[in-house]
Length: 296
Image (cartoon, rainbow, N blue to C red; front, side, top):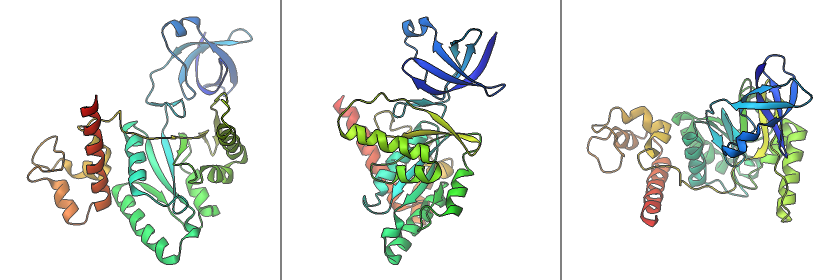
């Protein structure tokens, strides 16, 4: 009889599936015809499976809401974007690029600031002002100067319930340290992976989902490099939530908010309701996307 569940771990051709009904963990394999049809189950996939013998079989993969390549996970609800204040220095361009990519995958981004204790009070207050702009744009931001205080960690964990969460951010931003504060097992896994990768060995990348605070959290740091290859010039404006808020009031449908007359987004920008750094990065990304088109 077919049951349903979610893959929470994959390791060399076997998939551990958490049964929806009784939360039992069943080791399964994919049916042979999956390979012929070039279908590869991913951690996070919701599946129909049969578990009559010692080893279960995945019979079908239910429709995916989204999926990422790095880390290879499906059906992600939210991404914690770990953003460092210093070493490496805060970059609004990089943060916006990551946010745009996450929005493009229909995943909800949250921003988590690290290493703010390395800043002077004045620099920290300046950065806090910038992050206030992200809150106004509609993002949840965790920006205490003491990054890993218990209150803030509790608030973060409160967002995990009933969701699949991944962590992302540039190398050195402090993902492993944050993961360690949340759950030692998670942090250790990521530290080992990055050390082994730095030594140039190919590690078998097994991704697992850990059960934390009533949700599932992926044990992998997210993207290593980011481009906007998948995004069209038409889609880009819709990936800035604060543009979406006003774009219905632009004179032209499909307004790009660049040179069009009676553009509500440009009006709100002039009024200070939209951050200049976000708008400048938007123009920069639009240019980057248009330059890919010319190359291919």
